[in-house]
Image 1 (cartoon, rainbow, N blue to C red):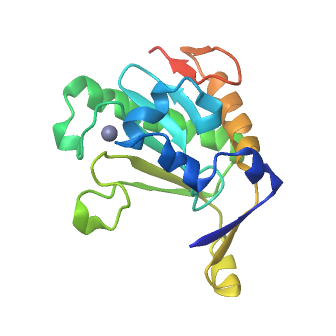
Image 2: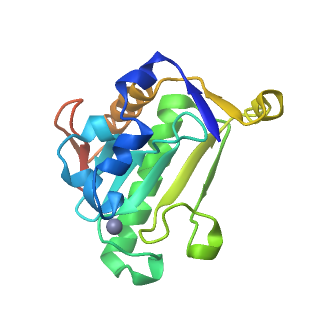
Image 3: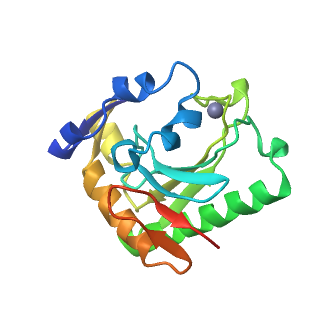
Amino acid sequence: MDQIFTPWRMEWVSRQDWKEISDGCVFCEIYKKGKDREFGVIAEDEYTYVVLNNYPYNPGHVMVIPKEHVGSPTELNEEMLVSHSRLKVRALKALETAFSPQGFNTGLNLGKGSGGSINEHMHTHIVPRWEGDTNFMPILSDTKIVVEGMLETYRKLHAAFAKQEGVENKGEEKSIWVSE
Ligand SMILES: [Zn+2]
């Protein structure tokens, strides 16, 4: 699916760049780079991080990803599962605060048969939805307009996370650290 972005897109890492982050697994590397805003990492704790999808289906499309390289939640231990759930709920709350969507799609594509693009490292998608937001599709054929720029999306979500309790804000360039 081709996508048309506002000029913010020019400030964002390109599709090419995200794949150049690592020869190996991009989801293992992206939170280690210390360039949180550049790579869209919005929040994290010891076991999990939340990142903007570089190829969003809708504005505010984020992924909740374990720092451990695992293909399925069946491979996560208890602490990691709790962390994953907690960050998912916090992401939903931050998205509600920032964008007031009318609904969400959230879920996992697991295994090669699922149709997901990265199968080796699990990631929970959270897609904010608005009534009629898919109506662009038939009009524009293969092209979907992401109305809001990704950096602006990052700023709003970062600010929404920063308002939550039990978090540490190290500034807009860095991810919000979730401590409880
Ligand atoms: Zn990985």
